[in-house]
Image: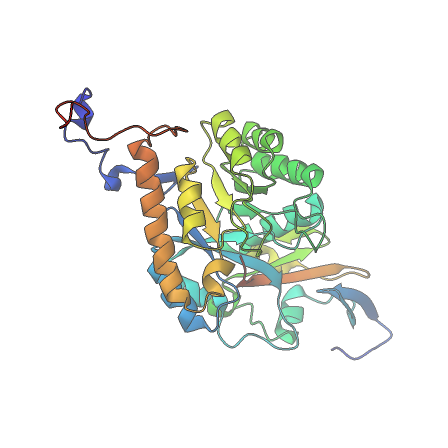
Length: 80
Length: 273
């Protein structure tokens, strides 16, 4: 969790509210969650949506978070 | 025999009997879920026993607090299986469409098992939301396997709007009640000739799988019957044999049922006449 500063903004990540610095890169958020965006083994099977739209993997590094953004980070799990 | 193709009394070789859905072709007609096994090794052994080539997975939020030790996907891909992501747990078309799109991005597949449920006790499909989501996903280029009620009209609508496979339930998900309305499934098969049909949900034991295939269904999708059996690997093997037996019997063409007896032995030449 990022420390709260004057420039911090509220966002929602997988349903949980948290604060991040303004213009926080999506890739930094992933690193905070122990997903290395550069590591293809770690990101295989992971996908990200920002405000109900899928963010293609090649676009991850261009995304900066804005106030009120909702991020979903998913992966495959056991299912039937 | 009156058919040149059937001169030896057998139907075409089973190796010619591919299970084709959209652009995808499989030799096995069983699709298996990957949940509720006693442990990952039993899952892998049971999947192998079924002979399946296509297994389904759920799409869920990454657990931020506790990342998984080994990725479920790694395990499945090591086994060489193709992955069918599902939208289990979605209650609205909006949730299901986003889940399908995330799955496509995460797994690099256009396949999706579309499941949009109406409540958590019956897990029955919400037909209005299901049709809405199916249309959106078909338009978006997905190969949609639509989980549906055993309702001929809903199934026909799903086929007509371009789903690659329509999957009416045998009975509620995880119930193991088998095929509770074979008459509806028969009507659905008669109404929908050109779209693959799969019995999804409710299969409890091997005879249910045989029934599904004898009804002319193209395949079955199951999970709990295998995963929660006392011996999942043995049940996986039983399901494989059941699907093969039911499929072969269907293609062989069963005799019509009669209310009264018909003697197998000729009456001619019997003694005492």
